[in-house]
Image (cartoon, rainbow, N blue to C red; front, top):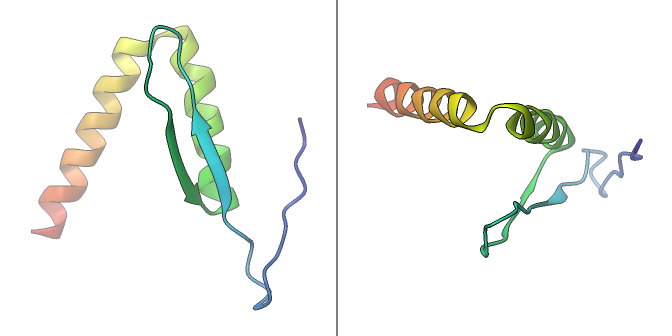
Length: 71
């Protein structure tokens, strides 16, 4: 599943649309992001299949750390 990175007029990598679908979840989350973030989201999704609870906890902890640093 190797995807080619597309570039916009400025020569920057074009944002890709990310769709996160999960079993038992009716909501689809869709947003745009840069290719590097796109890859890390794909990696997270792979890990999420293996052990969801622990990963969700780390994501929330990281988010809270970022929020605290901003304040």
